[in-house]
Length: 113
Length: 114
Image (cartoon, one colour):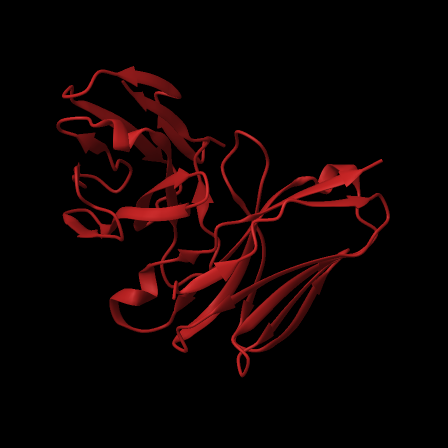
């Protein structure tokens, strides 16, 4: 049971660099999302998707891009990393119209210097 | 006013104590209410969820929702050191695009001392 798999687990970036956080789920979930978690701020929604080809912005989308070309994958792109993007990132997925259980990945720790 | 307010703690209790965690919210459209548990350096996992008002019990855990007061609670009976974690409340509405979005509280850090 893989569930929700995130890579990499840890990453250090320099300001201005770009990178992609990968997220894959093997549960055939329509809904996938990215959150960031910062001390004192809780979990904040960055972007979400309700199916292949459909994405929408969450609470804090600036500086991040997403795409959903397949049901399984939902990568998060940082085009030009900034120190303010230092955070822990969680990918999550759930089956729509079938309960409320949302499954989280193990997290990706990102530091931008 | 933030949509969901949760006291971050930290909360420290002795083993066997009854723990009460709570959240308040401002959006009257919220219909689904959840509690997540997050161990250190791990992703959150769903503990319990409740639809609309009422109580729900699962073993040592009881979730309560009072929609008239916009207040939700999680009670842990006979707390154990293994309950030490951050507890996050989360909620969502049941309409339109908001149906998809979970709004989280900031989480309460709980430590149960043996």
